[in-house]
Length: 380
Ligand SMILES: Cc1cc2nc3c(=O)[nH]c(=O)nc-3n(C[C@H](O)[C@H](O)[C@H](O)COP(=O)(O)OP(=O)(O)OC[C@H]3O[C@@H](n4cnc5c(N)ncnc54)[C@H](O)[C@@H]3O)c2cc1C
Image 1 (tube, rainbow, N blue to C red):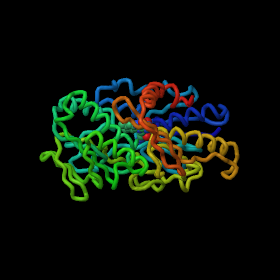
Image 2: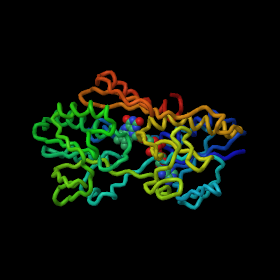
Image 3: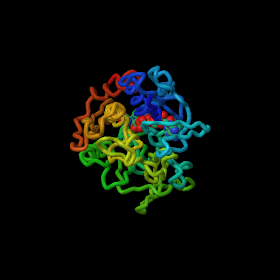
Image 4: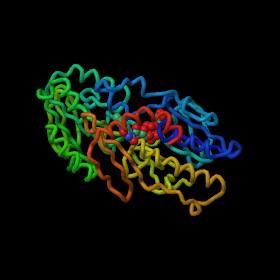
């Protein structure tokens, strides 16, 4: 009986564990999912919390309620991985052996990477921070808001743009938009990393009266002076600073031989195998793949890993397994005032941005509610 361990109980890990439980017979493998948290978090909902449009309590569910009965759940944080002896150590002292391993430990925010960030900046990239930002926005009466991206890569690349559009709408509804200057910053020479998206987003930001500051790589925040300084030497004063914090992979992966210094796991772009380890796969935010870190990415990667792992377990070698990941990502893009667009792309096709519509916004709202029944369960 083979031992399969899935590390991480987010979108990617939960889906992989459930699909494996569906695909493999009980006598073929034991499936264990290890997760640092006993709750599964629906992070896309955090975008709406600062504006009072989403109750944060509706954005998590107990891990156990989302897993097929066959999947053994272990709550614990992986602290070491030995790919030679095929062992994982957890912080509480437990040790687990695996024959096949799937790494889905996502990304974590690292505000500590930028001096002054934790004291001076707000964000919406954790449950707690999005709620704190709600309080800060409620107190805001007008002034200068700087909103942007504090480090690359970061998850859900469109979220800062969406946040800016929703912020414009929120301030307009509160009748303080004319008393507020919004400055949007981005580290590259355009407002978004993918050119076709930047070409659509820039005029939309301009129409909403948002000032754009590109080539702004956040170097430090000086809370006493309410100042954000970039590597390029630009200094921006703010009354409210809202920045996506830098991201890293899980701590036990930072500097591990299978990952880089930031903890991004070296992953084959097609087979999703971890480079140098033929019995380990990675998906979701934790990979070093040059594609969006998004729930939809993990969603499209999961079935590829399940098919490849199952075939290998049944004796196939790599050339006999046709399933490959082609870089498919799908993202909604909220543009405010009840409208949204959708991006669909892969390794060979850049996204085309459709005209924002009420229908797509409505689809996003429905998806946010239906997520629990469709995605981690593997129904969709
Ligand atoms: C504000 C916001 C809006 C977003 N909007 C969208 C959107 O509209 N569309 C979209 O597709 N994506 C969106 N995303 C991104 C999406 O939520 C993530 O990309 C997705 O959750 C990644 O899935 P994952 O399984 O890789 O990681 P996660 O879902 O983050 O799961 C990682 C899991 O690993 C566990 N873990 C971490 N370290 C360890 C360890 N050492 N040991 C054991 N377990 C560990 C965690 O507890 C967690 O359960 C958004 C994210 C944010 C923050």
